[in-house]
Length: 355
Image 1 (cartoon, rainbow, N blue to C red):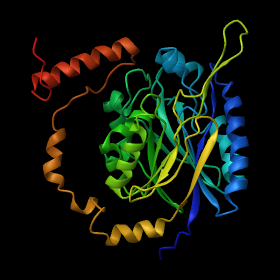
Image 2 (image 1 turned 45 degrees about the vertical axis):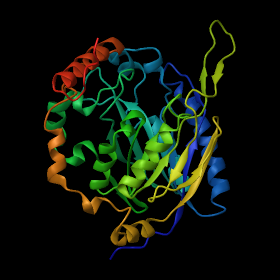
Image 3 (image 1 turned 90 degrees about the vertical axis):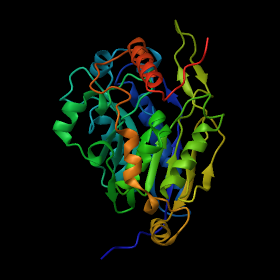
């Protein structure tokens, strides 16, 4: 018998991030997140129980690998987390004591992949246990994390070649949850894959400026919710605090990530949003039974039943970005990008400009 899921509140937590350059230093960001969880659960549970808290990308570790153009081995061996590890243990205590699920992101090392790290979305349940990991499949070239596609042959040997191997979904008592961070959210296929794997609540954390004030973050997040008749929880990260040189005071860059966290419903309506760029949060009711009823009955704005899968599958028969790549820095990824553009021009996908 399928149990009803009572409506509850989801919270997108937008936190200031202190730039850190060692793994131990992340405790300063964890403590800050913990203090904010205390506050938001106290305030929001005046309305309904808070059953899901979503963190922004970089909320714990910042973005040192990208900002400093670190090589993979260096970051993997000095900064990357294990999941579970002390970071998720800390959040697990909060999840358990507040009776809530927490979804967030960490750059993680996996023992099978020496000198590499992955960009990982994790979910902690209300028991404090890590129940879900998604490893980001698409990164932009300033990001140095390995993707499953970069180690494709080894990945499918280990995990199989199913949708689940690349786009897992957590089936939980508060609904089916899945998601990713940053640029991977720019690809409609990613959220379609989560949805076809059963997702009802999508998570998409963080884009930097200038793409937030240009409303790209919002347009993409609303579109992904509309495309898949699913809730979207989209927390951005708050201000970035960069250390000063020679004991100068730190520089706080309020607009580094642009804020504008939001929660969007399965019809694409913005239920909650905020224009504050520093520490803030958005909260909204999630009603999974209403979503399930709508998916079973709506003839419009409910697009998955109409998919003509055979004709779409042809789009992806030819490889575009190459698989099984070595760890790369900015310049290496730039070369692959250039070669890929040339391939697209040679195939007639892109037209070369004259002159």
